[in-house]
Image 1 (cartoon, rainbow, N blue to C red):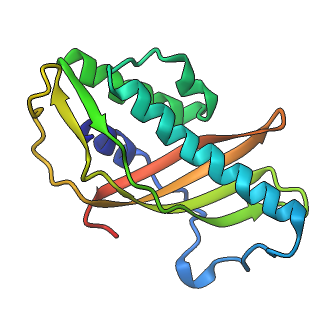
Image 2 (image 1 turned 90 degrees about the vertical axis):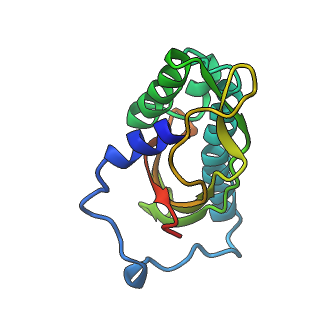
Image 3 (image 1 turned 60 degrees about the vertical axis):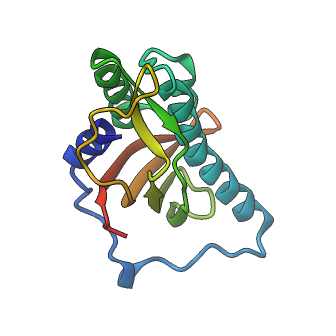
Length: 170
């Protein structure tokens, strides 16, 4: 997952990043419409990671499912990471462990933009040579602070950008 970490870390955090002390009020769980939006946002974010893990098993940077939940910079990062793994004769095995939290939904009451903060654990999501031997990983596995931006497009949520920090940041 070194490739993905390096590429995602190169993406700059948005200048309008919200510090934890200034997070907006949480979504009203009693409002069914807000709960449905929240579920759809989290489903899109988790779906992006599931799509990536599936394509990573064969380092298929052209996998059609990558576009199911990601677009823009997020899609470019995923595809480029898989292309580099493919070029190096490696694949990524396992699954990342996610713990996403929605930090922003705007504008209310009909949001079209969302932000997520996560702590992605890649301990069991590692590069391997195609023969299942360990890959050329020279970075520590662990928990990576991750931020993601999502947009509502044609009635579906997509991850448009994300930043995956180095291991040990959460």
